[in-house]
Length: 236
Image (cartoon, rainbow, N blue to C red; front, side, top):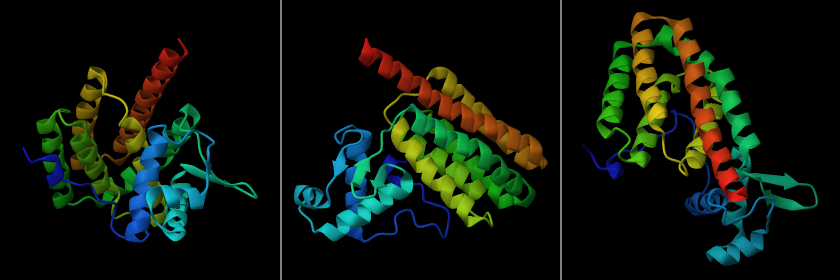
């Protein structure tokens, strides 16, 4: 099995995951990680000069990073009050996965009607790698799972929908890194991927769309359940 470093999921073609200078992109990763891990608290004010001093850089890359984080929903801008950390709470996660339940079936239905033999072969290849990994390396699973769904959405004519999917996918991937997959969720992911490939082969667009809606909702609920359990443990 290839090492994790040998595989990296990429955004659909034509969608720039960052769109910033190399320094701004690097700061974006650092600040996002601080938000996800709680080192930057919910509603904490993000002062450009303070962040630049902390990371030993100028203010322009910091502004770039904050705009990227605003686009993903990690940062909010309030008039006359500047940038603040958006709480990564259950409402935030719920809103994102519910949007996915709405848009991904449409993307999937289009894909089934346009899928080529090569597309199906690529889905089967990636699914083989997912099953070979079998959740042993959760980071690798995340990369492979993202690549699996990117195959279906990368050529969709509605680039706004594809970009929205990618941005929300990246947010959920970042948040879900905190939690382990339950055995039930692992089994569901493998089963649903196999069923999805079967629907694509058979040209069952409506069935594939219904399945992907359940798949996305299952992923979102899995993260929410972990978040509720963590919050209850902290409160107790």
